Length: 381
Image 1: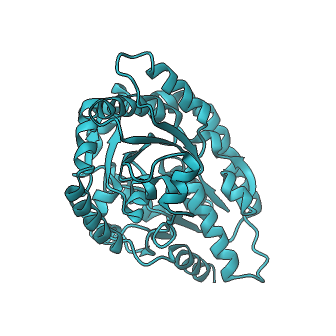
Image 2 (image 1 turned 90 degrees about the horizontal axis):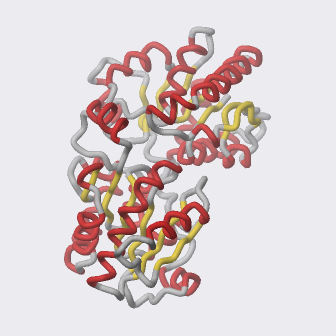
């Protein structure tokens, strides 16, 4: 049984499924569980579609609790009835840690792939890992030591699943040809996130920044990247509303879907909502500003629980501020415009790219999915 929620978890789980099948091609491996579209495409039987359960924030989650409860009960019942050799839980801690507790009590082997970010907040949940998880597969280099310091030994570091896997399908020249952009002029990508509420909060100040930059340097070209699970129409609606504001938007403002890596690789700089996309940008060597904006309720309730010095994954891996972070009140059109203009300076841009290259080396050489698959199969044997 395998369970993942959210777009990044679905992608990592699908890669793991492929690695498991390659490692044991004749085993007749059967997989079922909570799936996103990539897991279903990889042949995982769907007990629950988790596509619509990618929700963040107290108000949003509370209104969707009946939907989460139904999914939880369906998965628990399927596990109890079918008694899988193991239950693999991928990221998605608010849901999966509860499922781990319920199923471990019923004698099922629990393997957790992609550690919950307990080192960032709610570290007390480490006891839940110790009690209810038989094997934890970590993807960040400092996590194994973090758990070891708390006496938790059932942790193996496999490397980050994106390492060695993130590459553009074509170069800047081809991207510019397709998007009708001028490759000789600067390009800035805007990645406002994958959740609907994220996009609604983050894209408007991004567009305000683009307007301010365009007023100073009209030759700069902008690309808005549509994340999996979002649609171009959603983005266009927000852009249309922004056009009613006093600051005119850039004349060159393109919306692209299913080309996030190509857009990042072609960009001179990017503004990116905090999340997995910041690591993708680092792996592609794209200088970035990491941004985030929550509702006031969520920020003041949940934000104060965060105990780390950095929010962006690229900075957490580096252990220092490689990418500027603009969070909540610090994130507005003017602050983002200033930081992006700094990154477009040739000297600064080159220095940041060199530092990103150093960070990438800490993520491993690739093959994380294969290492995770081998450890899972060894645990089953």
